[in-house]
Length: 256
Image 1 (cartoon, helix red, strand yellow):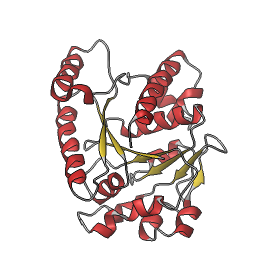
Image 2 (cartoon, rainbow, N blue to C red):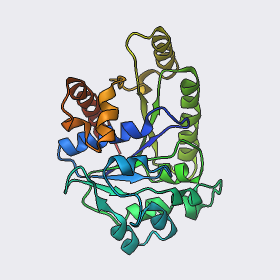
Image 3 (tube, rainbow, N blue to C red):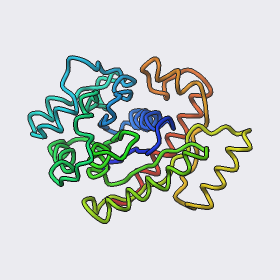
Image 4 (cartoon, one colour):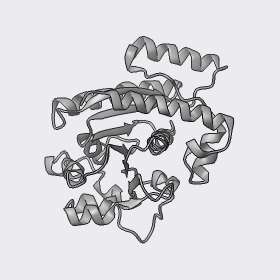
């Protein structure tokens, strides 16, 4: 299976929206998928229609990555009874987000995922920070997609994220490779965004993935209703679905 981390070192760029879009595409194409919500905010869990309280969550798995704990924590998403499962997130996972570089801590998610089978794709929604959770998440991944938006501070954060991936690859995660940069929330008529897009392409060349994800209200509407964008009834959602289909196809073609 492909384990794909979705990350950003700057909050508010739509990282979780990209994770959900890829999950929606995988579900639409019958690709058996697990979403791991490592973000203590738990937005991905909520948008996937999974209760955030009173159930086992990823914090318990990180504390005890045994096969019994892992299999007892994975639940079906609210999007479909089969084909898309969730390792739910919660605020308790912040307990594992310290600066500790202990190799056993970093290996806990990777070890937990080793007990699972039957999935073609695992999507890891990392927190927007460089703490222990993000490093543990990326340590478990084959590929990492860096999400940004075409703004000054977001573009600057891309370089930090790629350096983090390279540092992990040279250390505890030798199998990790960058998939590329997903540019989110693109407004076609913004001259400032056009400038930043060109800046990204000049800096990172083919690492900037195409197509970019346009700014559309349909994406937020589908998430607010806890529905996949592929089933949301609008022309804008159909366009978004095609974008996420192309990005998922690119991820699945990546050698691993």
